[in-house]
Image 1 (spheres, rainbow, N blue to C red):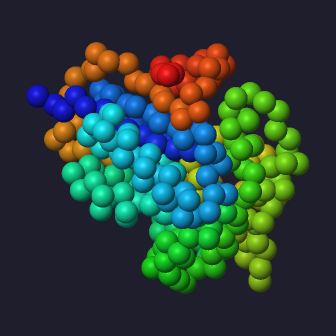
Image 2 (image 1 turned 135 degrees about the vertical axis):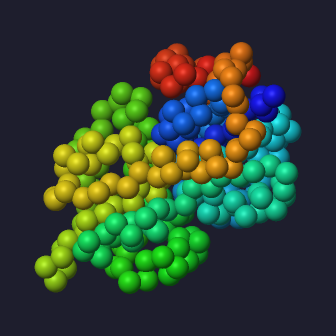
Length: 265
């Protein structure tokens, strides 16, 4: 009999839905619980120690409440800050993390010019710089910290107006033209950003490969679950939990489009 406990997918807001979408495609029978710490959004602006303490306390409660078979931290900022500590504190719970896709970018680039588009927290993180040293030391990697892009992605996903000018301001630093070579890959180092990829393509000064990590994260979840993956459909609905306890009909409709029932308390 397969393990019927849920898989927990965590993000600071709606960005992790990109990962949930891929996970459902690869694991169609899995019971998924989506948790958004929207009360703390955007977490990329938090002081590191305050955010670390919040994440440790929050996950302690989530594990006790949901008893998950695995947890996906679909947030670069959260995982690069607290992933190791969470694994140490919860050795019986498999964690699937999200880190900037610098290694595959270094393997794919033709020009050697890569940009990493991320939240300020991810850009600051030593973890990010260690990935560059380990996997992209022969490339020129530009770290571009965006203060507003996660919020703009949430607005876009909710159907609110987001101008091309606002997006251009956030991504313009990704494009480097140097010695006859141009940036050819932009790593989307926040799970919110893929919701804007089509907009990015239209306003970019030249074509680049926008590297979305969602599929790779879902594939890693498949590897982690192995024999514990569900082999038959769950009788329980996939659920979404938001730390701000929103009473928002439009959010309920949006989540329903991803197959989720919003649970409010």
